[in-house]
Image (cartoon, rainbow over all chains, first blue to last red; front, side, top):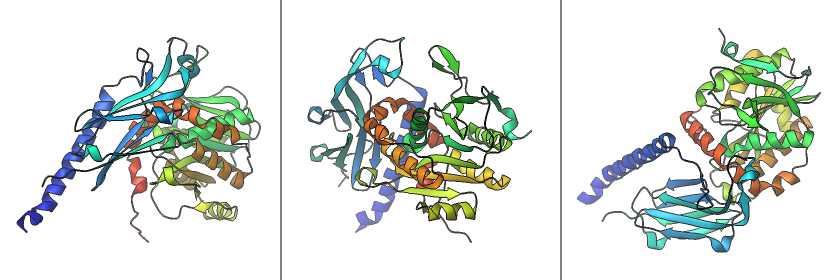
Length: 142
Length: 250
């Protein structure tokens, strides 16, 4: 009973720290800019988003022109996912109108940090119209 | 000094009077920009003016080695279309919109229409995307409704389209905002096509959207960086407030 009474406080604290972490991530992105492409690895970084609900973490990744069968979602540890997918065709840098860089892209590749404890082994993946949706149930301390 | 006095609009060609003026600025789903780019291609619109100001970040867009302002106005003899190729910093939205509206007023623009998106919570599972309208006057709103566009009755609006409605209502200029349901954070060409269908219903400006839908995945690929920058600006202007439940005050 006593534990139940403490639950709302702990939830509120969890939410506070999650919000703080997301805000920090936003500032980190704004101040430490890097290109969204890597010519050495021939990869593009896709747009992604992470949402935290009471029950789960939902990661979405925009993967247009992706070969669905090549899609890989791999947990690297308890809080990091690696997402990789082959593109339907090679995309040349010149297609973006850029002539001062030479190269091509063949894959999407990114890492995503999950901001709260989750059960990685219960992760579920959906892919529809080039949008990847990853659902991971949250793990609460007993 | 009014907000628009700090902005220069430089005309590069003769600008028609009594035209309709459209706005396609980076926002949720990049709906306005995607729709604007399609209109420019399909209707063969050419640059008629550009915006210059020290309030804007020191950015130019190079096309074939030549400098261009990121905020330009395209047009033909009946239509003007203001578009931005880069994310607009939140702090310049007021002066940019005021300058463009005041300039449009000086050209006796008969109607201003902003093309935009409205984030939908479960976007990836929506089979049909709705288009909503909000307007600067009751008559315009009724007209949009009569032509089959649903009215956004209550809620919050954040961004260039909010300034358009507010400033035009104050000046007594007819203005309309069309918003297609879309992804919040991802470029959404399907929503771009829907907002153009809404535009056709309300104004009669029709373009074939088949090519836009065909090129959808290519557009999503190429719009990643603009979307990323737009996300940062949307966070600054509290764009997420559009998803808030309004508190109705009579």
